[in-house]
Length: 360
Ligand SMILES: C[S@@+](CC[C@H](N)C(=O)[O-])C[C@H]1O[C@@H](n2cnc3c(N)ncnc32)[C@H](O)[C@@H]1O
Ligand code: SF4
Image (cartoon, rainbow, N blue to C red; front, side, top):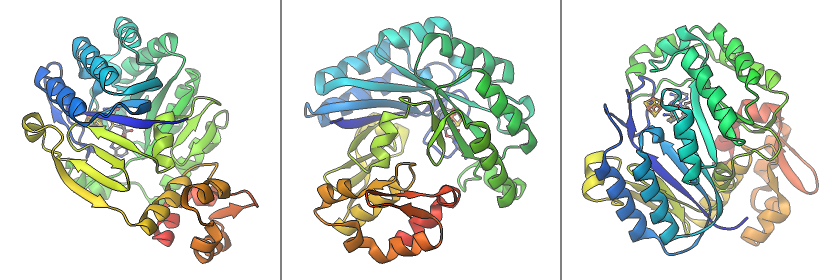
């Protein structure tokens, strides 16, 4: 599959969840028109007609964009890039989902919905400061499942009460989602949860919840550290990140990676509306850094890294470039290998950061 991935960051939410560190601003109504105008300006300025294999509307809350704005954005993308029947994902919050909206999203080319369920337990949802309750989450799952073949839901483990996670997993499975993402709750420094970080569950307990997810989601392929999918429903867009291939990010705070350069749009929303596409960071990676990052990303996935892929991409061999590091990681039980590829073991999934640290 050829072509870049496009990430579009929608920085608005109904309320700001107290644990969330993403670029976002709470608003009452829909995402403002000034935003979609700025976005279209940025897209038109960057685009060079290249082939695109995936488009991901992430947030923030992309389900707050009006349908008119979404139609305009899709038209602009169509006029600016060579869309190769792309996967078009949209993150939706359960409280924004209706049958009618799903039909409209579909008619505009969205073919994959990621639902931010987080939990099916009302107490845990209140702990996380979410707008929806369990009944709304269930209804949203029913609607999305009946409207889209390709959809998924996000769950958070480690919210209080942490014991409710198992029930949330069971409820998730009842809806047969082709895709499930599970993230351990983190208490981020620039969020209200930082002051409450002493409430974080113990690492061992977090590991038990992660293991529980692996166990209960055994009907899915655990194809990446935090992601589970039925065959054929793996995220094409995230696959680009996990292979360390090229993507272009639009919207405030969005990252792009092209020609060995990683750049970030300025994260200020007001600034973005004035000067869409202005960068706040630009970093040219050296060849070694690109190789290291390519390894780290591949070792987040079940398939790991194929030796032939590495040789073709970098004109060198894994053993020559990383022989010692890889041998050590294998000895520690974090990686396994055969003559064709190297991949993370179960322990390598559980302690995935360790692989990154060792390679850096
Ligand atoms: C940034 S949100 C955007 C999607 C949507 N607004 C939502 O909240 O569902 C994407 C995902 O990141 C995860 N997330 C955000 N902050 C997190 C945190 N501090 N700990 C764990 N997961 C987090 C949530 O699971 C969420 O579904
Ligand atoms: S978790 Fe989602 S809904 Fe909540 S503030 Fe972050 S982006 Fe917005």
